[in-house]
Image (tube, rainbow, N blue to C red):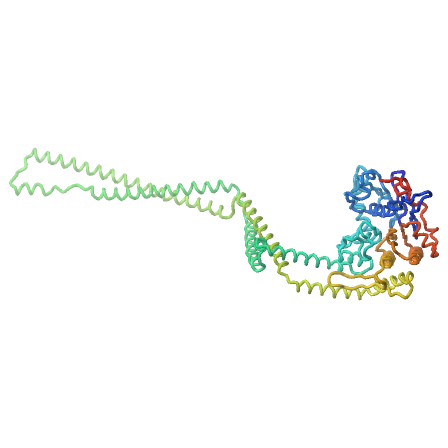
Length: 580
């Protein structure tokens, strides 16, 4: 129950509420002129302030953020479930994102607290309202406390009195139906699936429109092409992932690689030197074969046949030359033999060295082949990241292309399936539906008697759960307002009985614009009786002349009028105590 609406400005007319029916009256002051008006006295402002205090996201042009009110701190006291004393919430337009709570309900997120002032963020206040006033679970997609409050506290500024099944004029059908389903006890999860279906349909239409552009069409692509590209990209990612998983980082990889290069160069140099040595060895061996002593035994017989007798001196010189020649030949052979042996030894040593270096090179290469450098692993991981990003982009394009190519028939089939589920849920919860229908009908009969048919209709329509309140009429504006009155009263009673809503319902005086004074009196009487019977609080703002009309039809407003009343005195008769 709302108990008190006040402000830090002493000129503000604090409003004390009580259980049952509460009527805030805007009256004409004694001596008022014909040019005075009760418009702007603050009837609608009361409702704007209640919304503000109950966590509304404050827009720059909203009432509490107007320059003359920004520094005014408003407060609202209300009963809080499971707390022995009421909670008072303080909030100003200047610090509209924060509220101060006293006492603070349990379970306030400490991370949402301003440690300097003890205030909590408005978003946390909204969460507490959803949790404690509406008993919403942690996960409540499609249902929000602010949307639920828009049905319990309708306001003119949001065109809240245009349609019974919309809390405000910008509320989409599926959004309104989801929140109403929660209040009426239907499966709001099912109702919320209409929202997802609608989003899918909107996306398809938008992409279909975009795909008509030649460039956009190429960017999105075709499902079949993208499916193949995704398969290849997935395999590439898997291969790279496998390489990364199995990659072995070799310590001092670069040092080992340089050492392998050095060994390889040393082996190549040995091979080149061996080639030259083998060529030299062949030359030496050929020279050895040619280095033989000439045969001169034929000389003496030849001279004998010619009749030349060699003298002793000639023979002695000949022997000396032969001996010298033999000496030269022997020396040359000795030199060649030594050279041959040296080359052979060098070739043998080289072969052994090449074998040793080859073994060393093989061991180093095996180590290098088992892994790689850390920089190589980093590069590999970068490539893997790039491939993953490519795969992700392809998948998004695939989803977009799928949505684009999904046919209207598929969406229609999904919608038909959802309709079937929603209809089964309505049938399964027939008790809730019948109770709502009967209660709405009773309220309508209390206003118009039994001559007019009145009912609530629940239907799973193609685009949303459809809830239609109906009172037989000739499209009269006054009856339309009473449809809203009966609908809201039905909603408030059933939701409060089930613990899905708080115990207050607030209406603006605009609800009764154009309503026949007989129905006006009957509605106020019905509200008073229902509020008392159900333990509800019904707050309504009214002009005194409308209340007089109800009085002429037998409704005594005296017990229900708030002590504080507004007047048409221009300067200080309104809710805020001054004009702005």
